[in-house]
Image 1 (cartoon, rainbow, N blue to C red):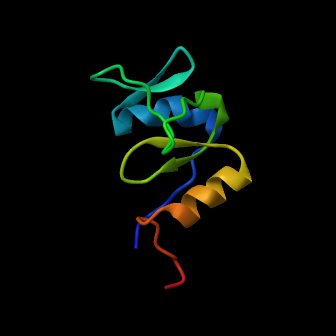
Image 2: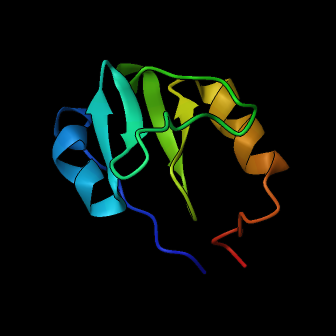
Length: 83
């Protein structure tokens, strides 16, 4: 079972360096490469629009319940915490 936790959106910029990321020009970018982190579908999402960060890497998911549910149901990495 994976561990998940919530981050206050106002503190996201302080938290991202622990994942090797930072916010640049409004997007989450890799500190070493400068590459913008994209959603699983390849979409660039502004940091202010992020509602979920996929585990295993930093894949931003838009702050929209249907996008988050679609990601979680489509993800083969997701484990049901009830199991």
